[in-house]
Every structure is written in structure tokens, then in C-alpha cells.
Length: 324
Image (cartoon, rainbow, N blue to C red; front, side):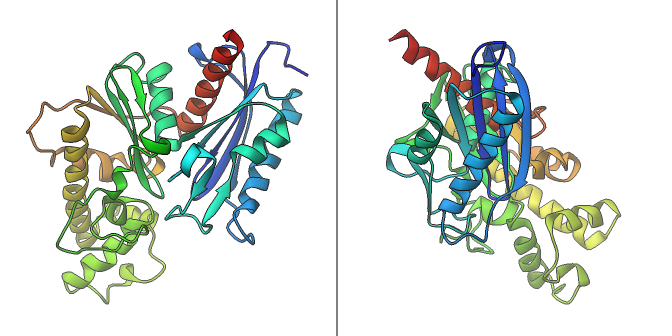
């Protein structure tokens, strides 16, 4: 059954920490109506990646049942990398499964087309079609969450690269002093320092280098959230750490500007959007001036940008198919 307003598009956003599902109705060009939305912790204790597949199917069924409709198409936004053909999540450094199948099981479960995007690409698509970068022909959507990635709009077109894996800027090298190991197996990568999972590891390494290794804040239970709270409370050592983190983030932003020459960078992801005073604003002071600095702004989509972007993308693909 269709919703009374017409076309129904279901979507899911699969992150390393949470999964969101939603169902949208009608025309997405003007921010289509979100009928129902849910959020759960990512299943991390399954026997294999099909546990996440089953979770996504269950969550999409739940929002569609609540909305009283069945999807005409499904959009998936997911942390990468994606496999050849974009059929599954393959060896994600931030997920506990080597492979999470998506396209075939979802198409079998819902008998409708399924469009899959890297989550940062989905965020960029939302920004370009209906968000803060609407109609900006050259933009980058940067997400700073459990991991770090970006989506790229260049010349008004989404840049996906081979198998949808363009924009893995979390794996740009930004440091050769600490040489922190990254979840992907590399060293010195931006994600290893400045992501939600990387900040505590960087802090412990920083404490060791500055003889603060026995500080209570450097214990095994430290999180990005507790560090941010301590910095706001005025802890001088942790405040000094965030100054060094700002240098790392400035290097990452400088690399994005040099690589893609965007007119705008939209920064999303909870690490940045919930801590602009500690993560976002200090980094701007450490951007180099090789190329003109673009407009750099925080996302206003409250974590929904990738989910909405995936729905917009799926709806547009559906309309193209219907016209063929």
C-alpha cells in the first residue's frame, strides 16, 4: 500500500555506532515529509555481518508498518568501504564484521530497488539537493563521527569513485610524529587522531609524550565526551591537548581544500557538531592558505543528513527508472 501522499521511500543510515531507519513521502526536492524515524545501537555481537543485515531489514519493516506503507524504493547510507558493485560493506575498520551484505537481501526482502551510498556521499547529496549547500556546484560534506570521511560534489555531480569509495579522507596521513595506528592498518591517518574512536587513543599517546601518563584522565575509560567535558571545565593539560588536536584537524581541512578546491565545506557528525568550540572552531585557525579558503560551516541537519541524502538519491533513481 502507498501512503496517501504518493511515493514512499524507506532509508537506513548504517554507522559504526548506530543505525537509523526512516520512511519518507512525496517530493524530496523540497525536503520530503519524514513519516517515521527510529534509531538503534548497531548490532555488534552477531555471528557475522548478516546480523546487521537482519537489523536493517527489521528496522525498515518497523518504520514502514508504523507509517502504513510499503517502500517503492530504499536508500542506504553506510560507513565504508563498499565492496565491488556496492553490494555490501567490506572490511570496515570500525565494524566488527568482515562483510555485511546489503543490496541483494534488501531487494529480496522488499521487492523494490535499493540504492547504496557511502554515508558521507549521502550527506553531500543531501547538502547539494536540499541542505546548506543547495545548488552549490563544488562542495565537500565532511563527517567526523566514529570515523572520518567526506562526500564530494564537483561540477554539480556526486563523485563516487570506484565502487562508491571516493572520499575516504579519514585515511589521509596527517602526522609522522606519533604515527598512531589506524583501524585500517595504516599509520598517522586523520581518523586515528580526530574521530570519536581516535581522540581517546591520541590523548593517551599525547599524555605519554608529555609525561602525563599517570594522569587520571588518561585511563582506559576515557572517551571523547569526557575529554570535552574536562576541557570545558578548564583542565589545563586537556586544554593543551585540544590545541594539538586543532593542528591535526587543520591539516585535514587543508588537505581537503588542496585536493578538491570546494566552494563550501559542510561539517557534520556528532564529534564536530556537538563540540564546535573544541573541535570545529579551533581547527579553522590552522588551515594553510595555499588555495582560497572556502566557506566552512556546520551541518544543521542534526545527524539526519546522510539518511535524507540516501532517500533523495533513491527517489531520484526511481524516477529515472520509471521514465525509461
